[in-house]
Length: 107
Image 1 (cartoon, rainbow, N blue to C red):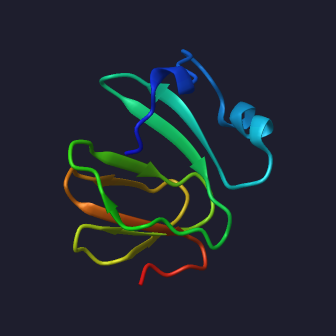
Image 2 (tube, one colour; image 1 turned 90 degrees about the vertical axis):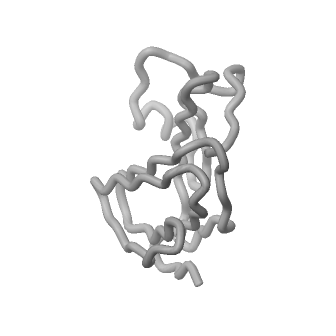
């Protein structure tokens, strides 16, 4: 999970995704929602063809929630998963992850 200093996060008791989207415009973008010592929540919007670099978070677990579109995820040494809206995935700490938006492979 990317480090999020509290000063960069919204840290508001309520916010809508539409409100955040209006502030950014076209993808890609990244908005830290919560940044504290105990929790970090980041909303990311990827353009078609976006791919992350495979990486490991040694101390933090990651939760991915696909809101729209399709994405590919590889968690640890598991199989690639192509998922769509409403899917929630968990990556335990110390497991490598890689992800890509629709149309991209992880290989």
